[in-house]
Length: 497
Image (spheres, rainbow, N blue to C red):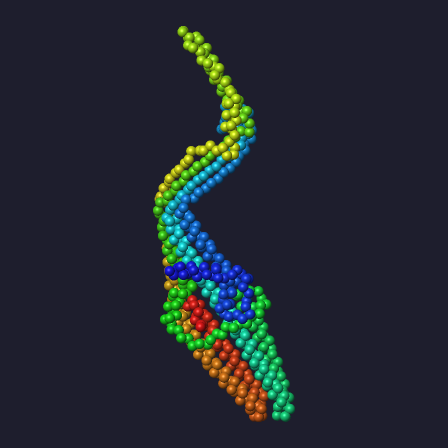
């Protein structure tokens, strides 16, 4: 049942996704929409998806090898006039001269059947290989989902970075206007105003650079989607900062049944197991059956040669008849003579020769049919069979070890991953609290600056602390999302609501 569901899921990819370039990016783009568009347009994924067609053809071919093979052929030939040689003799030596040219045609039908153990195991091997191909497509799909998710998250990260830096630009501009107002009442110097203006310039540079990084991230996302550059869209998926509620045992159970790489190695191991059985089949006998039917035509360009031969034969018969009558007449008593007048070349014989010669190209004369049966048992093949069986067995054992290695790696990676995600979640909460404190400190510093209790440098320091807190919070939040994406790749399914 699981194999059927897997085949249906792979078939869904082929039916659900359109041809490349047929689905543009919508104006509002969710993460799920991005993944579906990528499945329909990402060139690398579609190359892998095409492997399904070849795998299906291999299965059909394996079943077809169990059926007899039929061949049919036909041909025509022209042979010019002249004397032909047969070994050391020619037709002239045999009394056949003035040979005309000939038109020849032929047909042949053949049925062949070959059966050995490898052919018998062929459908099982092809089905196992197809399952391995399906698993590879699942790996490619999981990789595509991870790549698109990472690109989408990166675009969100840069989008959030632009938003924060634009707010910081507004804050720097507010500080600059505040300094100008304080200069007007004489509570600060022109140096403070100059420093505020420098802060505004730096903030604008940071916004400019952040917008460029956002543009780059959006283009990389379009690249993953297999779409041309320059399309405008809005990212609408909100990634929640949720406390990890999964247990290590739950994720391990999910990974052991859904991880695409592990599933691919399991399918490859099953294919290798059948390969061992096929390799052992080289010790078994093979059966070969063949049969054939054929026919030919042969038409001379001129019947003068055949007519001359027939007339020569009649003349010889008449000569023999006359000689016999001469002998009969000398006997005592003589025997009655034979009627030699009955031997003559008639117009009917001439017409018959002409009609029999009219065969080309479809007046076939059938050749005797043939049928053969052969059983072959290999006895000694230079130790190649032993080597092939051992190689197949080692490949199977290596794949079994790779499955075990992948299972151990998943257990370790999930244990590490879930601990890291929890740490990232707690770090993000702490950074959010730090940002709130930094914002409170900046608000308090502005009040004191307006009252003339602190210098502009101290106000800038408070602003810098907030900027660093914003950067740390952003890094912590998206580090959490990056780690969740990596954990989803291990588990083989989405962990976000």
